[in-house]
Image (cartoon, rainbow, N blue to C red; front, side):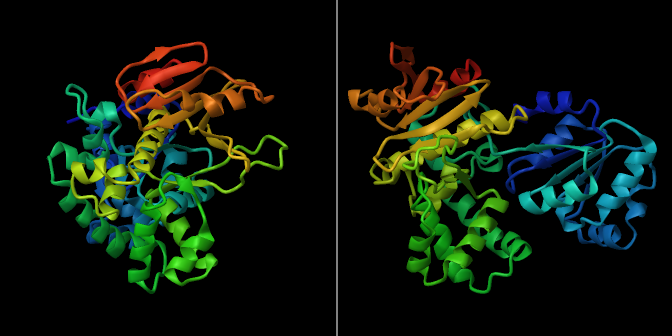
Length: 386
């Protein structure tokens, strides 16, 4: 089994918390991580109908031994359990007695904030990082983007088209019905594909609404569903500057490039190499890797982007301490002088800037007076040095 980067941080975080909650996309490896980290815990699977029925009808029966430790998997199916867990935790006063996992971001956070306030540490596990997926061998950039990073696909070497077709069908048939009362799955499926075509771009709800033939409110609801189930991530714009020229719309990204490729009907690496959205998919890949870097260390990603109406744009701003580190993302395999343009413009602002980075599709990493140039495979080590 692949040791997850989060595991050591998970063990450290356990100190002082009676409950640990691990959330993230379906099949990101939450159950495996919990079992690897806490192998001696009793395991309760709430996707099992009998266990779920017991959780709803007689929740205390699942925890007959109050002194024991438990992993409760997919607990969003029976939020009624939380009051019982809270009661036992308060009575026993034991560190890390309960490990909860679930795939429904907003519902989980709402239930936890209401029932387990101050008692649970919360962690978000995304699919494999680049280092987890390929710890020993190097892969081509197109292979990484096309295959994506879901653990089951990589560990069992599943054909990406088969895996993602099945993932989408399962997502539509199970998660969507749990999260929202969507009447027309055909429209929603088309919406999902249109979102894939906009990964790495500014979100325009009106454009999506016009293409599908629904109102903007419906699009807003559907976007919330995709966020809730960890399909998309909305990167917020920088808003701490009083300039009226700053763009206020977020940018839309998919958490996993393999899923986005499948929705775009990219069926192999050759298709990807020639696809007009390859640059957007590379940007999506880098943004996803940055998100994983922070989540694996139990840090809320301090990320935004900068864009003015006059065209000045920085793909990513990373805040650390009192400094803001600009990061430009370029899919080209060689550095072009034009890549510096927006970095130099931003350097004239009054923002407290650290040294800028350019992450690009090449393999060399070096530094000059303007910025650090980061080959895509060196991104994680570069972030560690921030």
